[in-house]
Amino acid sequence: MPSVTCARSTGLTSQQVRESRLYVSYLNSLEADWQLLGFHVTWAAARVENKGTEYEHKDIILMFAEIEVRDADRRIIKSGSWLRGETVEILPILIDPDGNYHTAFVSQARVPVGCTVKSTPAGMVDGNSKTVTVFKELEEELGRPVVWSEPVWLNEPITGSSDPLFVSPGGSSEAASYCFMTTEVSFEELDGFRGNTAGNLSEGEQTTTSIAPLDELPGRLSYYGVRDCKTLQLILMYTYYRYMRGALE
Image (tube, rainbow, N blue to C red):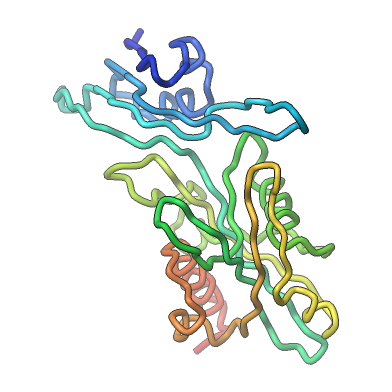
């Protein structure tokens, strides 16, 4: 059994780490001929929900660990790693009565980069299925009652595999699954998205929605202030998906 330890400052026990989804997921991700030797958590964050006057702590959602493994070539490798888990990246497509396609962006304060970032809706897969997570995130981040189609997943048509794509495998375990969804809206409903404020306030999240013409996005991302790499990947994957099906030349 690998050694699992925690810095005292984390407030965690080794047992709590072993039982966390992030640790279990990391173990399951190891190739059959890889062996985990040591796992030392130096920092961790748990999901916290505000329950009025109390806070309820959920599972660990982010941790930094010093990890030691033996790989397939019997080399012992040590690395500091951010463990974050899987996310879903969602392209919401709004079709107006004239048949024009639009998409919704959300602006949200992002502490790690010290600014507000505009991106398509996204969220972490925390114990739910990817599809359940998609509907949950759209409801939270867009804050409008909408009947969406089922998500169309883009990973497999583009890469040949339904596995999520690693975002930054040199330092993080985060992996993303990309999809798009459609809905038909009236002009009044479309206008209702503009400047709409939503988000999961119990987690300190606040988002503001913007609307943009879908077909103009690949060449005009900077115009809309999009700096999120996964949003760029999602739009380009959707564009290529349409091209493969003859919808674009």
